[in-house]
Image: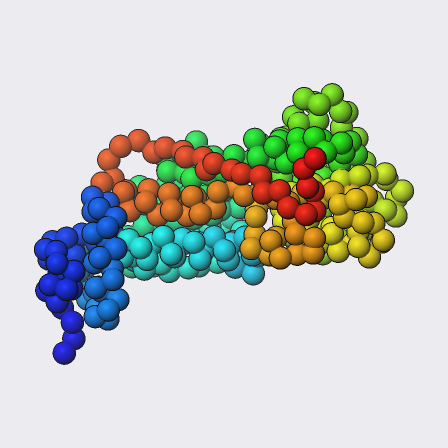
Length: 335
């Protein structure tokens, strides 16, 4: 027979109300109790009747996550973390890709499809503050990413400036002075590129090192090919450098490949630091020193914030910034 809510409660040794609270992702359940209920659900193979639950509570038990592109490791790993955090709260995640295009992000905020979900976690690239002003205000939404909009929407972000400053300070602390920065975008002052470049400049200023414009290299895409091309361009132009700061890990990994092809030893001749702490960073040769911007914290807090809005929409919107950590590995070891 199909297992019921009563069966789960009996096996877990808790009340039906407690099981319901766990399934609905309500926060006031002790972690040990939540784990006991989830174990019973797994053992029995219990599946909530989402239609019946929606009719009773007005909620679906489903949230949406929209990211620019799942082919980028950063967003794929972030999506996996959001799904895991939501699953621990008994919530299902529907994932969409926007391509980072403003029109698609704006359309998503007004899409009738959102009626199938309880809320949205959105990582926008093209969205502007004005696009948020006429969205359905009753629909719970949490934004991710660098741009903090002047709008009544919860936002979970990272400390781009401080983290980039720490990355450059680490390179300076190992005696490097000619640090090439890969991934600059002139028109991206408020995005990841501009904020991380701001942190890089602050670290140089603190150390009394002048910024050489020749060392700041723009790339069209933040991928391995972009990083490799940028390093090849530096070498072809005869620009001297003893370190590379890739504004994300993909750029840094591409840079390592190009340096190896050119016979430049990493880290002996050129130290390399990235940003994101992708899983691949631990397994590259050499392993990549990088910034962990707190993605797991971001995923957990985005889910918790959204579910909090689902159960209680009152209260002012707030911005939370994740803690970061420098992961020192072989590509730029400390002294």
